[in-house]
Image 1 (cartoon, rainbow, N blue to C red):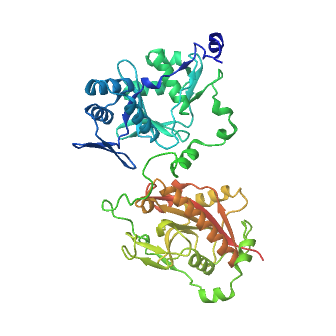
Image 2 (tube, helix red, strand yellow):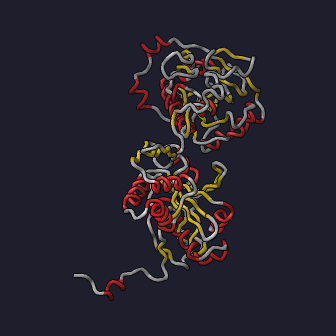
Length: 493
């Protein structure tokens, strides 16, 4: 039995609430979609496949051309089809539009009567565009995770919480987003940005459902400020997490060798940094394999040690430690094996793509047989290159390590890991820095295990000053700077 009219009216949305009409958004194809018209068919080249429309009518061809160009509203596409094909069923057109929506190859543009404001471009299969009610007087503000940047000569608005990017169309779109830096209602936004109220309502509704704008309270706080989960995410951490893995974006990702043939790859081993070198002890690996502590014992007794014995760690121990953890076993030349198109190397610890971008710098406080100062480890020749004697940089690096260790000690030797970033960025897209941090973790564990087996004191640190190392060692911050720190010292029985 159908409900009475009064009952229907009682559950209808409040007349003050706005639910935007999706049919009023301008539809267009994603920028990567291309069409190829032939006599009997049209091929629609999508990002992941090619769709063939056989027997495409003049009207459907015109619709496709419009979608590839500036786009049009759905009713305008229907009128275009009817004007060229006559009285035909529109079911085929609507079916295709829904299909393209499901495949995430359509973009949605909000425009007022004279100009385009925002274009929503899906970035993941989980993208959805659903209607949502917005009260004209309810306050909204930009999410603290939203950010703007330049992309292909346009300003885009993105967020790690969002499965789409929003292209800001000219000054009007930028003004609209800028106005939401402060909590504003749709009515206030309409006045501030010079937009018709229905367009301002629609804009807020779209941004809200994309998690780019969030409800704001009278005290200026937002919904995010009271969410236990989101409160514990820093902006840069969540952004890094979302962009260094797949699932929430459509940017190039993985080992695509994007600079092959454009920029030479960096050598597997950094050129020697100084002629003032210190040769290091090379342990007998065969003897170690026979007499070293059992692996399970080493693994189970591994721990951070911040109490040092006297005398301090020795140069021979440093030599054995570096030989067992970080030396170059051998070089791998380009094209010597399938998929290896750059110079690589083999070392005791695993490294992403055998790239081994990490460089080790030793800041020596006290070491039996090695003067205090800053040294670079040459892993191919297994030697230390002296960069500077004890100076203000040495003091600052050691003090920073002590702070990171809660002032429980000053390291006898501080090993700082620096990354040659372009070594990884030449091969990997979207994940290069994430891979470097994974390599740092692998190196930490390798050093912990070797130090435990050698009965010396290891301790990984959680932070450091990258600019300071760059100054101390004469590095270009953008080409090579620190990504990890590790303390070593002698260990009491």
